Length: 418
Image (tube, rainbow, N blue to C red; front, side, top):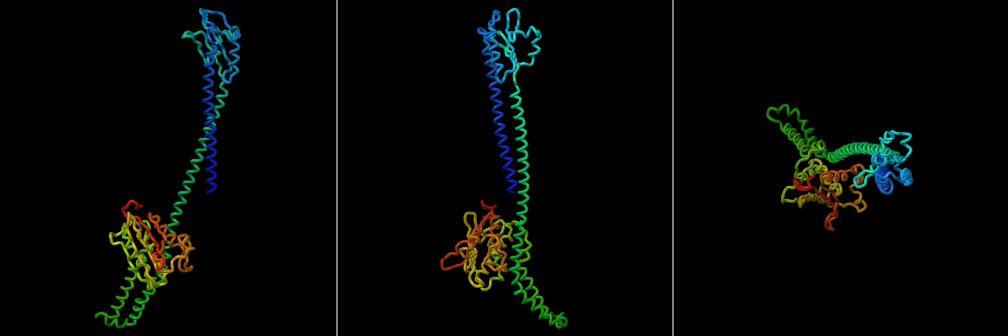
């Protein structure tokens, strides 16, 4: 990633240098054109009628002045050669500089056919013409340099765009992979939580299964009394029904297999009760207190089993912190389109050194065999994805130590609903 950023920085720096160079060359080209136009205007202004070429009817000329002016302009950056002609009454156009050219090249106008032609006029009356062979080597060099730099700039910008597209594609792929890893982590934590919760299920299942085993000893009586209905048969049926009732009320299978993407409108009070039921096998002698907002059901838009994962995790942590004795309070309050759900225990609370890193991954005050250290980290991630927040607040009264976890979520249909 650092190498990719270095390449992008290099392309940007190169593009900036090329852009600055190109701007300088364009400015030089414009400056060259302005100076060229000014030089041509000066030539027309210096070759005056009365002082240099004389009126058409006057055959006298100031050859020394004409040659001096011609040499002056031929020494500039823009003029390579300069011919001067005069309009003479009765003779037409007469080349006066270089004066010898008509003698050796009578058809001299063919030579100047491609030159710049500057007519000399006075009050609308022509009195001469300047033929200028411009020196465009510098201009061609500037234009060539502009073309090369423009091509290099375009190439650099194309490479920069390509690099950004490649990086964007890589970032998108990394984002997708990270999101998939996040989903896998949530599911693994859910499975770990289910494993912790199911460890104590056997305590309750053992009784009906043991009763079924003892009732099987009366199998002969069942066979004899089947027609009239055996007490042992009824007992097996009742114990079997109890077995499936326990599994149904627990909802552990639905919790593990739930799809995270299935959002629906759920009553947060119902979520709290289902979460509490899911973790009831860690309850011990803990007293449950419900302090729920009775004004209206706090509906939220969320995948229900992701919320159950959050609150069952908070409930399980509270049970384990209180070690089977204490008081657990579930409290809700709805205000300004937000619902606050609190899980408050009377355990020992969270030590100050642990508070700062409580929601970091793999941070836990539990023994290694009692947790993954990801529960609170994943719970906060789930709540934040839903547009809410999860935080640890002060337990409340100074004489009531413990932990108070506060979950804040947008009420369904409110302005903060994601």
